[in-house]
Image 1: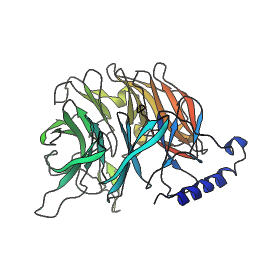
Image 2: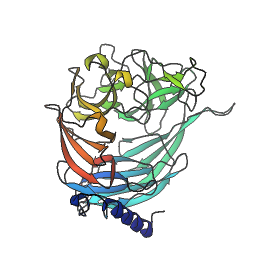
Image 3: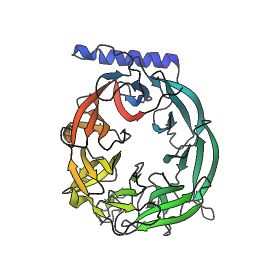
Length: 421
């Protein structure tokens, strides 16, 4: 429970830990930093403590701290989405319902608008003025029952859930496996749901070399078709947005090529092996169509000289900041600690310089921010030396520069919210 006593004890604990640092600057309190940037920060001083949300006026310079600042969240696993001038903080309830809290920004500070309870979901995205959420089935229903995904719609104007329903979880694959959505995306007046097939909670598949996107009407969420391609493995990864609509309406998608199955080559039970034979690639769906463009395929491993994509951030003008990992060390849950600028029209990949070396990085934030000006993006980096920074990436020259410093925890999300009247 989020109480004043708990928050006071947490802050005292943080201060006690940080005050033991040798450097004076690490002992000094950092005042509030009012602004329209919102950062979710997980405390490092105490395990099992919920995120804090802090504001910042700039991501380029300065510092923020959760010590004595920020808004504590309820629960230890949170995910975040911004729609218009509102910020939605959603609790991942480990299968149980979780709290959703809605904020806006007034005078540079977070302002709580509403909170309610919603199902724990594995995929979510803004659609029109709503937040669409899907609770994905991970195992088959009992014999005689249908295996279903559940969907929910939250109206961002009223900040309440307005409708819900179910969809067939097996229909999109057409091969008997569950279509586990990696994300959701509004494309025109439709919802595209890229998926990977699974045949149980271990996420194994017997069909590693095919990509699929389920297409649904909105808001009725009626299944219309599956867009299929056998030139790549599945699109995205678990809880990873790998589908982007660019300015002219074209849709680009990446595959990490990390499908797995049971490793029958060993006597050990429960171990897996990579089974994708296709390279990590980028594909395209032309604006106004619901088929993969067979004239376009970017073999990412060839273009990057031996890397796969693990995540990306669209920055505008057909350019992405991509997290990349050497092909030799790829895996379904391996996050790339190198960055590259990817131009999907020119089919070019240029590694970013000035970013910390992978051996110095503890984790990289996957929920990041860009003004979508075709040039800049901001990536959260948590280093092994216990410092945390926002790095500013300049796509014009593929360089990274250290920006805002974050004290007291590790960044889990970076967003920007317009001020409310």
